[in-house]
Each structure stands twice: as structure tokens, then as C-alpha cells.
Length: 346
Image (cartoon, rainbow, N blue to C red; front, side, top):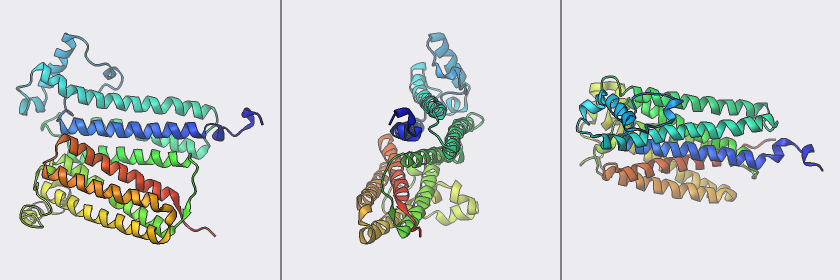
């Protein structure tokens, strides 16, 4: 049979899978660099958003001085970094620039192969819609990133913790969605396990809420509060919990650092319990899924351990990043479990 007579989807199946996985890796790399940017207080170093010409960094002494002068007019410089020299400024500028540069790379790596596969007739109508959704998701991420930074350039030198959480959560949702699509281009046997599938979906939703609260913890710097474990100070419930709830009411669930850290801690126990329950059901009813179940059990244990260390050592950069990536790896493992299981069809 001639190559040209084959279905284009079959010809380029492995290539599309590789392309989508490259997209997942690049989005996650951007999340990692974004974490470094946040933890090193570098996110407000670039005070302008220039999607095109901003790809070229300052190259001359005059250009660097102009960038530094514009930064000196920002709230962050006036409040915290008035002692900065140009050399200090270049260090924080590097991380924010790298974060934005990788965002541009994600766009290029995505759009040109997508155009090639589109023209070659590899995508059916459903996949074309999914590709467009990824493209729009990427554009939205870029906009949301600037919208987040802008919140710290007006009056207060702090980005909105709501916008930071939205930026992080949507990035991970986009990575999970691309990974989900990549699995559709990889051949594997699906297991009829409706109970496990339902449980995995519920656990994925729970982990998603936990990730959102992780973003709120980061945005409120709540990880630097109550750096003791397993208790919060000397008690299981923080001593000022009632005060926070009385002062802010329902908004304290999202805006008070003490309450947010409290919720994040106890959601972690629910996630661990959910993974253990899922693992037990797999062990009893779906031995074919045992390797993936073991993986999830190991990963949730590592993630919990990293979370404890990150907390008691008051969020050092290295542990903060590892804890963030642990959540990502666990999320992708759950996505794969959902994909590998199926409802019973009669």
C-alpha cells in the first residue's frame, strides 16, 4: 500500500503525540520559571507589556538604564528596593524576562506544527476545535499574566492573590488538557472500571481545589505563617481562626492567610485519604491499573512530605518549586487514570 493512501491521522499519529507532549513540557517549564519568578520577588521587574518587541531584552547600557529608570518609578522599588543598583535590578529582570520568553516559545512551538498538521488533513473537526481551544487558552494565559502583574504596578507593590491563583490554576488546567489530548493519540487498552473512574474524577476535582488553595497560599504568603507541623502553633486549629472569620466572614475563606493555610492543610489530608481509597479499590478490583495506582500512592506521599518541609522551613525557593511540581505530576497521573478507565457500555 502506498504511503499516500493511508489515513493522515495514522501517518502522523506519533508526531502529533510528541508535539502535544512537547507542549505539556513547555507549559510546565513556564510554570516552574513562574514559580522562581514569584519566590525571588522578580515578577514586577518589567513594568511594560510588549508582546512583540519585548522579546528582545536591553542590549546596551543606555537601554538598561532606561529600563531601570522606569522600574524606579514603580511602587515596588519605592517600597522595598530603593537600595537596588542596576546590577541588582538585572538579576530580578532576568527571571521575569525568561518567564515571558518561554511563554512566546510555547506559542511558536504550538502554532507552526498545528498549521502543518491542519494543512495535511491530520485533524478531524473535533480535533480542530480542540486545537483552537488550546490556542485561545494560551492567549488567555498571556493576558492573565499581564493582568496579574498590572495589579502590582498601580498603588501597592503586591500582585492580587486572586489573579495569581487564576494565572497558576489556568496554566495547570491547560497543561492537563493538552496532556489529555496527547493520550488520545497514544494507543493503550482502556479498562472497564466505572467505580474507579468516578472516584478518580472526584479526586481530580478535589486536587484542583487544593491547587487553587495552594495558589492562594502563595499569593497571600500564608506559607510563612504557622510554620509548625502537625499543629498550627500549639493547637490543631489556629488561635486566631475565629477572629479572622468574624472579621472577614465568608471572604476570609479566600482572603485571610491564616484561614487559607488552615484549609490548604486539611484539604491535603482529604487528598491523601482519597488516593489511598482509590489505590485500595484498584488493588481489589482492577489489577491492570495497579502500576498507575502505585504511582499515585507514592506521588501523594512525596507531595505531602514536600509540603511539610516547605511549611516548616518557611518556603525556601527549591522546596516551593518541588512542592508545586509535585502537585502537577499528581494531577497528570490522575488525568491518565481517568483516560485509562471507562464506563461499562452495553
